[in-house]
Length: 95
Length: 130
Image (tube, rainbow over the protein chains, first blue to last red):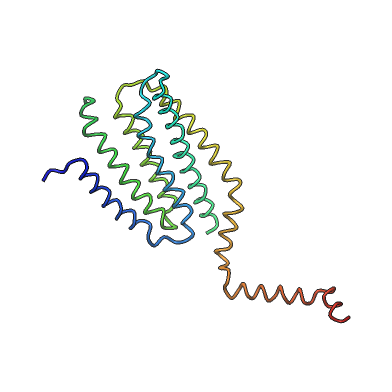
């Protein structure tokens, strides 16, 4: 059996649904906020797509939009992970 | 290693590695003891993903990419530090609320003490005696 790109995509989607469901069950209420924050930081993975679209030095529309996408994705990544870590550090002190 | 081999083999392996790191990161984020470690794992996964994306491009003009990443990183870091200042009271308040478990016997005890003090208040007592 050879899987086409669409079928591979469907496989990934279904398996990822199971992984996602398994990972967010049985989370203590105190960790809901950091988990949301961390998951939001991970959604900055869009930076991979953004990097692929800003590959020339010329200030073309595509390049400027790509650079803008990199900036916003990087805000998400750096800000997200830092905020989550600050939250968890505060959490650790209290315990 | 030629760029073709990097693109067809190394980069997908790096992406897979970062996916695994994300999954373990979120998994560890859901337990109090390992939460910080989980966040770090996810951040390392993101680093691998960015490195993979850069490797995939090969030799291109990096100026816009590096500039955008630097600007975004600075804005993100400033945002993270500033938002923390304003979010501390709410977060601490929430944690306190949870620790005291509003609605437990202890809270009704505190409420009872408060009522007693309020009933013993002088002005109230005067009003009562009048």
